Amino acid sequence: MFGTLPVRLRRLRADEDGRVTAFVVVLVTAIIAFSGLVLDGGLALAGKIRAIGEAQEAARAGAQAIDLSTYRSVGALRLVPRQATILARQYLAAAGDSGTVSVADNTVTVTVTVSQSTQLLGFVGIGSITVTGTGKAQPQRGISGEDRGLVNTEGISGSNGNTGGNGFAP
Image (tube, rainbow, N blue to C red; front, top):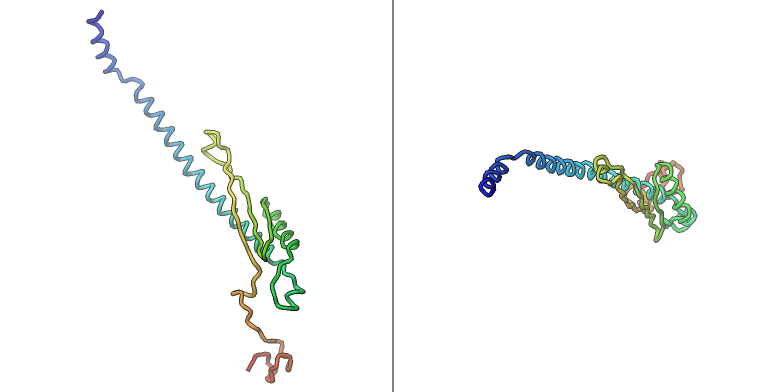
């Protein structure tokens, strides 16, 4: 009986059936998991970029709610907080997104939450990834935000101290 033990051990060592199969199963599983991370990670990143863009656009929409009476009387740009919130929420609703809107210190802040469905990670129980993006905006004058002191260009003489009547300063 002990004489046959070395023969059996040699036979087991020579018999490698099933060892390659286990290696292939582990390797394929690792490749699929890595592919899932790459693909679904890219989709999550794209969702985050989209959420940031939507939040910035909604904040810009809200920053258009300028208090015109204050602007006309003293030239200061101030937001009407309630109107700014309504405009930002209207933009989010039109875009089909959900999020939060707040107005403080003349700044509109919007946070958008997006749920991105996964493609391959669903096989391991991760059906979606939630990402958020935040955007802020303030009211600005013109393109550069500076008050350029523009003159009247309607050609009405005397309205801007111009005697030429063409609407441009001498």
